[in-house]
Length: 358
Image (cartoon, rainbow, N blue to C red; front, top):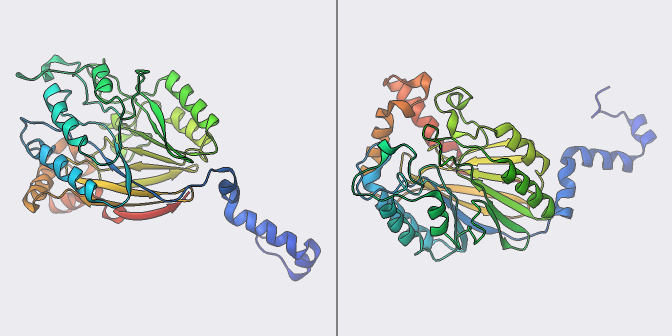
């Protein structure tokens, strides 16, 4: 007999009230208990910006370097006009390649935000280990100098590249760092053992709160090219399975994880109770930023286009289509159907607006 089907006699045998209780538990699962153990909080609005790759001397390509300062300037102005925005997450790759001169412009613009902002480091935010990438007339930051530059914006005097901060009672932000600043060949990442152990303790000690995690690199792979051994495998951390196992263990305490790095439109995937999000780049097509509203029960979002002229967006789109490495392997050739598939993958317009229950 189907376990969801009961005859009238079986209904009377089991007792109506018992059956109703059983079906209620089955229909909502363990989430029926989540609100009882979590510290409730009302709606909190926040924004996420990522991968602006600011470059004061650059040229437009797949990364729109010549437009990068304007993109960040316009986005900061838009965020300052938003209503009830509590904070902004900056999900890494603020700079083209760790330049001091570019940092000064980025920091100056971010400091004009009228709400707190929190930063995590990306793989382009420190001096390139490969000296061939060093440009004349630029000076370069060490990764430690990057952390120091954003003291008070997540990073504290502990000098650790990861941190936790309470936004309101019941809601905390956790910033993580998987960068490999001394590897001359690899732009991927690994979450070190000590950072995973720290995260485990944080989520255990604050299991009654919602811990919003963000990191530059991804915990999951968004396309076939990102599978291990693939040409884009380093958009995801090497030890993704180990990290996801830990997050699954703490899914009630940390149901939302946000990353940048991949340069595609916002996407979402739920795995074992954890909702993984990828957010778009300000600096490459589709040139968007993201707005979220979170409570202890739900998360809603929308993505907005950076408010630069249409000609800039069209140039960015054409530059993406001409950037062979960035095209999915199966759509390498520039023909109409392939171009359409590439744009569908990068724009992901179906996910520009959405909501999930937590």
